Image (cartoon, rainbow, N blue to C red; front, side, top):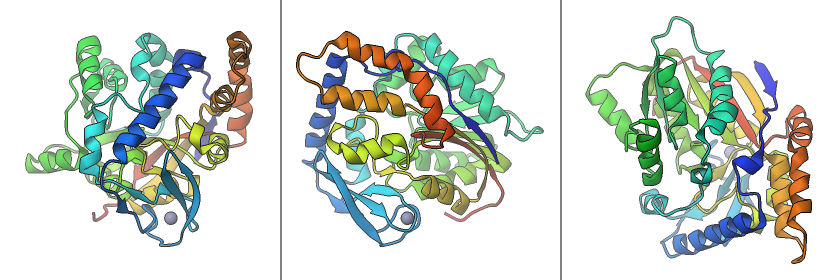
Length: 340
Ligand SMILES: [Zn+2]
């Protein structure tokens, strides 16, 4: 297995960093939580990854109770509304901030291209260039892939993203959930993919293991799955459990899960994949500063706090080297067929 550590970025360009934006975002999450709590809740009795019943209470955030699986360290809510009911909230402006990112070129340069270059190292050479990008967001990845000569299908259900991708990047997302797409793919006997990208996907699903198995079905033999996923055994994870009401990136109202390193590796193994490479990177130091901002005195100078973020890359590098990053980019190869 090949490991890589650290990815430089300026979070002030990609995330809410000033007092006003952070406050606004926090309030959005509170409002969203209130809306979701009007729905009927269903208890989740087993670990979504290893199926164990041994779940213990860890903390609550915005009235959601979070549990930890004592077997695989997976974090998940103890109850949530039906997924079909939750889908309506995707069309409200919710947990994503990306649309504030006016500078798509900055995003391409610092996020999309480095991720593509990492994934590329693990792609089996003789493959036909077919790539499926799940929950594709703004469409920056399919935009890049097309330029690199890939045949790309991208899925997205959040309407503002679909519009943005079409208008700004000429990317046409398919407005289908993965189970519906798999049905369509099998019915029409379409060719399998050489790569499936799930960059920000599994944490918002009630049945992540089933989706990993569906991805297996869509890949050719030796095909690559690329997963970018938030991690609970990280510096941000510790901050999340210490200040659960102030968490802006992990444990959002829409999330079902926050994976541990053990639970994400386990899920990929169970769905027929062998891990080939892991890139430890993240925004833990930004997370720390965003927590501090939320605890600040009213009169705190904005300028002083902003200066703390200037050192983002220096601090983050140390966290990544210690494998305490809040994000992993994992590349894994399909080594066997699995049953769903
Ligand atoms: Zn478990």
